[in-house]
Image: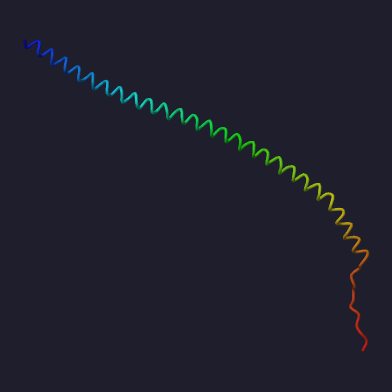
Length: 107
């Protein structure tokens, strides 16, 4: 009888160990599933961030092109206006020379 009681205790002890191990496995599995969900979310976040970065890069390229176009247009306007302004200044100098002396009134 002693042998049977000892075997029953061993079986009970093994059963408790199995229950404890099953609980540990369940907890580890839950943590693993949570980590997998976090990884999937992180991948989505990275993909979204990459997409936004690509859009921003395209916007920067577009703005850079607009700035270059504006600079070219401004340079062309300056090249066009500079001779005209010089001509206007020359014409003003020829038409209205500056007086060199102030005339006095006779008393």
